[in-house]
Amino acid sequence: MQASPAVVTGTLNGSHPQRNYARRYWMFAVPAAVVVAGVILFPWVFTLVMSVFEWKVSGNIYFVGVRNYLHLVQDSRFQWAVIRTLYFTALAVIFPMILGMWAAVCFSSNFKGRGLARTLFILPMMATPVAIALVWTMMFHPQLGVLNYLLTVVGLPPASWVYQADTVIPTLVMVETWQWTPLVMLIVLGGIAGLPVDPYEAAIIDGASGWQMFRFITVPMVWPFIIVAAVMRMIDALKTFDTIFVITNGGPGTSSETINMLLYQTAFGYYDLGYASAQVLVFFAIIMVISVGLLRVRRMERWQ
Amino acid sequence: MSDLLGAKGGVAVKSPHMVRKPIRAVGPYRLRRAIGRIGLYLSVIFLISPAILFFFWMFSLSLKTELANTAYPPVFIPNPVTLVNFIKVFAENDFLSYTINSVIVSFSATGLALLLGVPAGYGVAKTKANKAAVLILIARVTPGLSYLIPLFLIFQWLGMLGGYLPQIITHLVLTVPIVVWVMIGTFEALPVELEEAALVDGCNIWQAFRFVSVPLAKPGIVVGMILSFIFSWNNFIFGVVLAGRTTRTLPVAVYNMLTFEQISWGPLAAAALVVTAPVLLLTLLMQKEIVAGLTAGGVKGG
Image 1 (cartoon, rainbow over the protein chains, first blue to last red):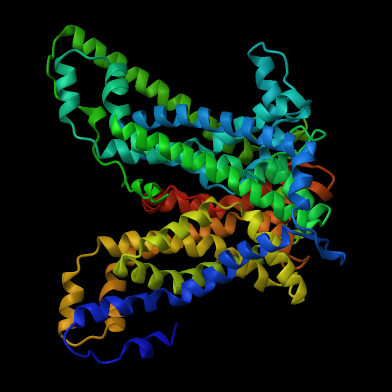
Image 2 (cartoon, rainbow over the protein chains, first blue to last red):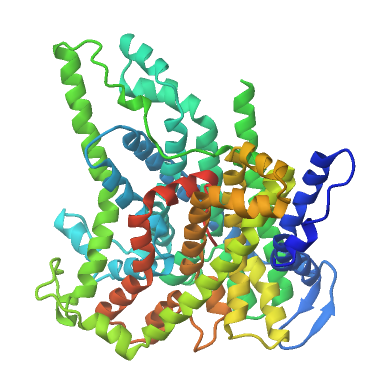
């Protein structure tokens, strides 16, 4: 950093001072580029390399070609993790999207206490994930948990929450929805804030209902924002780690073991780094394919 | 991928959903508006109550005695209010030193990110190198674990595992992209005239950056600083792998309480509150800046 002034204080030469400036501005990005290369690009390359090796922390390192990838194809534990991840992600996108759009419409209206309400609403996504996961864990307690108490108060039978294979993923989706609906709300709200008022005035004169205005004016006009929110939500849902790790650690059994959880087990439970690297690359490919697919949807909508 | 850049929106100032003009201020319209108003308030209450109930319960658990915490039906309002859980967290679980660890790691990671990211954002904005922005998006898409495996190996080879430095360096994965991201937007939005005037008056480009652009970009720098601090503070996965017994950050410490302690809810809830309190306070105080920064990229750490 301190070297930068010395580097850029060369005198202007000749007839294109503007162009010389423009060319020198990249110097500002050099220190960050070095760091990014070190902590982001280098790990990528290294992961690629490791994925074709048998690479155990205990010492055995030798080249195995695509064997790790072949292993992946046959590994039913990994395949189940993929299915679980997709199931979790689908639910953890749909619910926050619906609630987030609803919240965005609400928070775009002017009402008393809007600022405070919005602040309270975004607290879940700012709070430390481990801390909130811990409190959820206590709330899910089968006998003493407050959630089962609340269910009995309204006359429902107690639920098994994260303690049974068939309810664990929906329960984790509930936590995820609680935590990340605010981000969807903020992105969509950003879109709504930029909308013109005229179409709504015209619609009101024509006697449109609130739902009709939402469906036929708001949604089409903020569609790009909705897609961005969906892509962001999807990437985050695929990558969810902290809350699942703390609340269930993949359990009971392996019934909430998503790709990320299995990845952690493979890398830092079994220290099988070569195989974990292959899993990372497949995981990344899945994320990219789904993101690009969703962005395609956005472009298609634009053509219409 | 650069389509993701489209999410540049500000804080909602004025909205079409609040068209307030009384176009037909007659009976049925008024009634409809009143119903709409009630619906709006009910919706807002429905939407924010999960957050309120959750944090209320967190406070409640942390302020109750062990007896009240294991009572059934649950006790909602702490009576008597006790601070014994917080005292336990600091006296028996050494949370003071974990807090210091968290401060060291987050402040260093944020400081370094600003030192690197502010000039980088400026450089990218000036050269209009949009490919650099795509790289940052890829960093956002990548799962944190995929950085961790190679970096873990490197730090192990170098014998650095357990120290502060591996944690700080790894946290740069979170903090540098967000700072660069926010700064690109900030510098692009600045008027070029002042800078050009400075250059004409004989400043070199470093001086124009340091004495003209950086002061103008202060609001953006604050946004980048807050977000990068929050991402770093909240991070768990890097610490759980890289930290040693004495260099644990707060999220790792609180997780260890869950796994190694006899489960007792009061101290656990108190610890959780201690971990997340700084972030919640920051959110309450700097809500506008945080919202502006987050909507600029829809970014989240980890």
